[in-house]
Image (cartoon, rainbow, N blue to C red; front, side, top):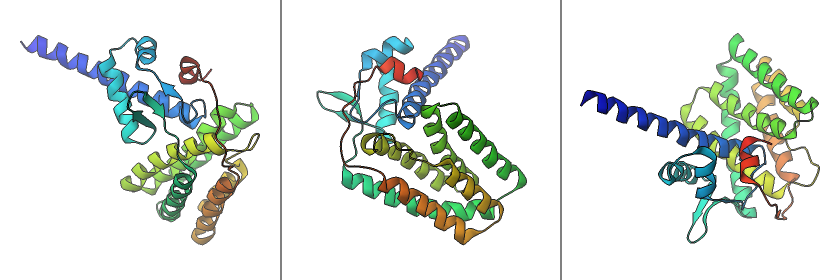
Length: 236
């Protein structure tokens, strides 16, 4: 009996691991704009890609729906969420409010190690930009903001930011102007410098300006893109 229990637990752990792999792959593809809003996610495609049952796939999809990354629609299944223009404005307003709270906390809790983490994140972002890896650059730009949320030391704000960054990536994928660069690396560098200098007022003003600039570069025109799910999830 103990051996059977161990085997059952191992199967459950393995299933959970795949569930999280699917979840993270979809989130990363959204953040890198490889899965634009409105993209249909077929359960059978995930089953084939990950060699798992529909039960495991549905657990991942339920988690994604809970975090507003996808919508589960009757008779259509799972699709990447498509925020309306008003939802986009509301989400950016919420993100500005959250990040105005995060930046002072990052400065308050700053240590040599946390400042080193910020600079390392910026170096990775800049390397992706210089190499022409646009998808990687976009993803790392979002992860920079998530790192700040982590360094703020408030787990509730960190949870909110994880959702808001993913939802902002959806909005940018839906409404960005062709050829625009949504997260300027120089602004991230300037923000890091202000954090190092412990200039709370200036850093807080910059993060708000930074997010407003991103929002103003959006256009209210939906994109109609056909997507290969396997390529999007693998980052090809």
